[in-house]
Image 1 (cartoon, rainbow, N blue to C red):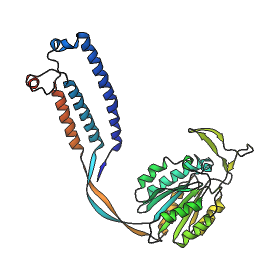
Image 2: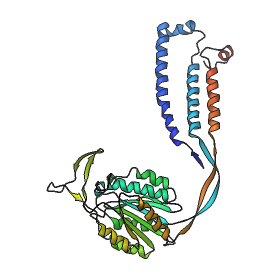
Image 3: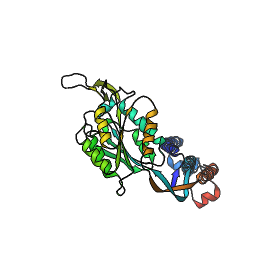
Image 4: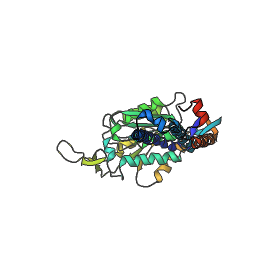
Length: 342
């Protein structure tokens, strides 16, 4: 298995574009300067020692050296061996409400941003658990199947917004059904689901879905985000707030947390309810709840003993730079006779 220790360094390869453009401009300027010295038929007579293509070879060699240096900086690594690692944990699906009401700011900076930060903090505290990710509004969508790779979920979280929802609503029941179908077949125990939502405008079948999932051994924790007082729902256009969401009569809509419904789903789903506030203790409560569930043992293959390979690319870069240094733009006698650069 191959990976880059510093993959962000590969962005430096974009520098090849301006370097190529600069070289093209240089070539055109050079041709114009030579043309001013005389007609093309006299150039070989006026500048007999001037090689025609060596400067191109110098540029190509320099570009290859630059590319090799970038790869050396990114440091490719090769996994030399694999080992099987056994972990104990729970299979967890995290379901996040991305409906428009989650943009309300009664829980600063907003319900959705608070929920995303909570999930990020939770992932940093999990150990051997495997996690999947679902988003939902009027429908539920599977984003990340059950995996031990938390990085994929953390990367995805940064892009989550209500714009990803095809229809509006709060289809908690649909999210539960989707999680139940997406879990690995076999042992129905040791499964958990964490639902983050304000519970507003929820669709039907949430309790029916929770009951069905609980009968199969799933435990459902619901986390309410919002306040009883509520807050208006901002409307954004290209990242800039332009208005507040209004009803048909032009009155500003206030979105409120629906804790009763969230508690019912948790109770029916053989789980627990938690209200996400400004404090930081909620993550510990969720971790303790997960630890109280029956743990499963997972066997995974993990690549170990990665070896650095940057030295190969560094050596190639030094060699190419040395070659570039010794390539002269003047003709050499034996090379001229061999016609390598003619």
